[in-house]
Structure formats: structure tokens, C-alpha cells
Length: 183
Image 1 (spheres, rainbow, N blue to C red):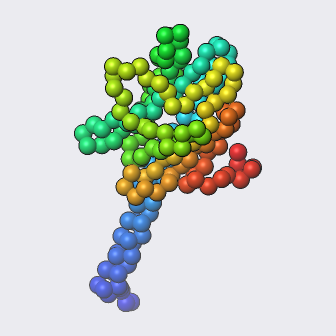
Image 2 (image 1 turned 120 degrees about the vertical axis):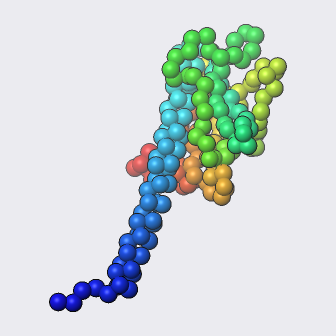
Image 3 (image 1 turned 45 degrees about the horizontal axis):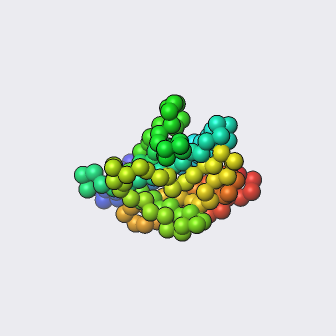
């Protein structure tokens, strides 16, 4: 009987280590992709809810997206607002759906609206009444536009959420238009 030589065993172990590393790297980013996909789908669903709430209540609703730098990391947050006679403010009743939220870290957000191609996402002065970038009108219309999620390190486009005047949402992974069957 002849066994394996030391070099053959080392080569086999090296191949196994390389394959394990490649698989673990791919699995590691997969969880982040799933979380981000869930975030995009959740935002689209919540925007649809805000549009329905605006129509049913007869009051305009809005989404304000802000950017804050905390500890050297850029963090994006979203706040739901309702238009009152005195201006925009958080809704009087806060249900679980329209609570303020925080976007997943590790991405840059880009907001483009039809009337404002480069809508600013910035830090708000707390002494100034907030005005949302995206408005859901009581008549059923929505400020047309899209939000892009970009990888903060590479600038790679991860997702685009696009909506039209009537609030029809399209989720585009990597910015690619989905097949008609996938909508």
C-alpha cells in the first residue's frame, strides 16, 4: 500500500482552505444583500401605505430623508410627516408603520426627484420646521422620483427604488429594470 506524500496532502489542504475562503466570502455578503433588499422592499411598502393614508385621511403625508455623521460614519434616517395647518409635523397618531427609521449602514443614498434632479439629503437645523422631499398628496399623487442605494466604499449601485406620479413602485436591483413577470 502506498499513502499520500506530504506535498500531496499540503496541496489538498491548501485547495480546501482556498475553496472554504471563497465560499465564506460569498456567503458573508449574501446576508447583507438580503438585509438591503428587505430594506428597499419595506420602504416601498411603507411609501404605499403613506399614499393610502393620505388619500383616506384627506391630508398630505411626506417622507424626510436626512443624513447625519456620527462617529465618522454617515447615517441616513427617514421621518414621516403630515401636513397640518401650521406646517409639517410628525403624525398625531404614531402607529408602528410610520415611525422614524434608520437606513442600513454601509451605503450612500442618492435621491432624485422629477422637479429637483439632485434633491439634497443633508443635516437639518433643528430650529427650522422640516419639509419632506417626497410628498404623498391627499388626491393620490406622489412626488415622482427615485432613491439609489450605493455601496459606500466602491460607489457601486446596489438598488434603485423608482416611483411614478401615481405611486407605482419599481424595485431595480443594481439599477436594472426587472422583467415584466417579476413585478
